Length: 305
Image (cartoon, rainbow, N blue to C red; front, side, top):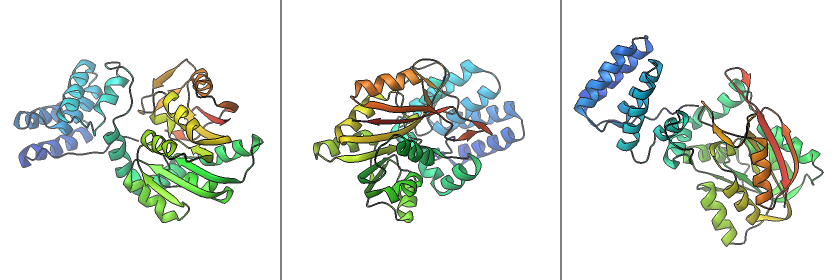
């Protein structure tokens, strides 16, 4: 999934040059597109969308240094980084791995919400919720839970899967447009618009406790699992269960894939579970979805407090 965020420059002529550049790039004229973007930037030097698009065009032209410079300009022009320029700098090795900009994640999923379910289930063969339910059931944990929490619930695909197995279901997500889709499914008792870290901190302060916590296709947007798993442990009921999916890779630690999703090595996942005081029940290799027709390597994880 790539960002489709467009932020106008406020100048009709500059915006028009941006649109002409997109047309030329679609026709394969990269040099012409780069020239039009440069013209737009002469008119509006802080035109974040044009800097970001210029960086993408320069990458296609195999000008990595030029792409890095343009991504840096895009990031500086929009401190909220709604295009995700800093993520691309990480991907290119020009910045250290760090958390994704919150505004980028919100904009990304707000723009994707209406077509999210169809894209995942029909095109990407998404099956993380079913894999998680099967893993929880196979773990020996009870399959009927009192209270359950769906972290990064999105449009509610995991909620639909787990609703028959819990008495009370809460969903939390950063994107209001995704939450609107989830609300329409009618499976949640409570939906909250918030980032995961803030929500878990507030729930811990309120001494809320959940018997089951699920995070389906969520933790691949987090570089370090230690903080979130520690926060999860604070709101799990004694003996409670967490089930989550991650994308993985053969090496150690965490990497940022070209898809702008983090992949976590199995040893990293095991170490962060232990640090959070969570006992692993299963860490099974399975693909939660496809990407360009190929299975994405993943881990389906179940742990208890």
